[in-house]
Image (cartoon, rainbow, N blue to C red):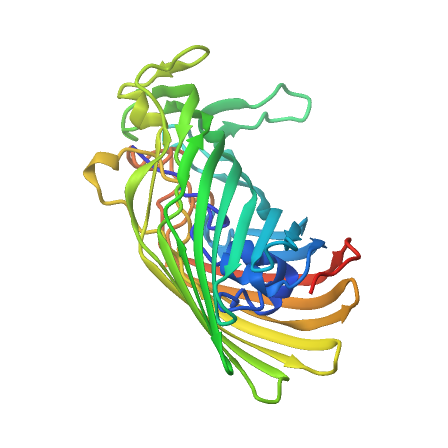
Length: 487
């Protein structure tokens, strides 16, 4: 059974772990904050660092403006790119940090934040006059459309505690509830027809048509646990964070897949035409979002002058064997249907896997004046998806993604005042990959090739040059709504 590729736009449960950083203060340091300087985002990066906040506070880190430029040359055919210019605004993080006066070594943080929020849309069309149907004399009019929409929102909420064992050593733990809403829609249509000879004539004659549709909508709720350690002595500080695999609580979704064609000559030397339809629909398909086991380590060096901090981070994400991302059933259930020749479970289910990934980051924080800091950082963001080779999952759907690595560079200024800070900065993200497979070929169509290619489209070529550029503008504030500070 054929597969239609989906362009490499997805994040979150997409193909990168370090694609975004939390809280503008930590973002200016490119998220290289496991050993400290994470501020109100400590609950995520390393809960042991909650002890760095020496007073109770209620804080808000405001909006993040994002410009994404994605271009995949030849992705929809020769000289027919899949591209998108995207602008979005993301709310970030609200936290409440408490330091009980009767237990001065205990720190508690409650947080709610948007981990990811994305929306991507590609809607492209193509038309031509060409001799596409050999059995029909002369040229036909050809029209084809490609539609792709994907949105994903991942929210976290929970609590973390940090405990100072001594002035040098702190431990921390956080428990977060992760909610993900994932929506995907992919549609390919193509038609060949003869236009009427005169404008006053009736509509043209439809000779052949094809349609492929795949969409799902789902939600998933799971638990995330994080264990952290922070140690500091003299000019050095070390941090460790362990994140076990996430634990599913509940979640399901709806999947629809249809493939149809009509009046297709599979044998160009025969007048016999073929038509076909396969379709399935199910509700309450169990979703299986998965987060891998990961270990992060960081080291910070504080210069003796007290004006400069150098930060280093590494995080290793273990692999996840091939699993069912969306699990359909053999029985379509209530309000569902199955018009396929095979198992509807294979027709509608999705599979995924994760390969091991090691990401690295480096950053610097420089004090310009008592209240003004200059920060900058750089981090890798390696793609974790790999082709599915397990025979058990060969016929499952895959939301395939152009596999390329991304590199992030950040810099900016933060100004501190009595009740919070103002932050202005930028992140530039860059990714490239050549010789990728086309999504679909709409510029070199033929009537029929074989069952692996949608009729009225062309042979899939490996000539796609993927270019990804992302510019994030940080213009936000962290404001403490509580007036009293504890020593």
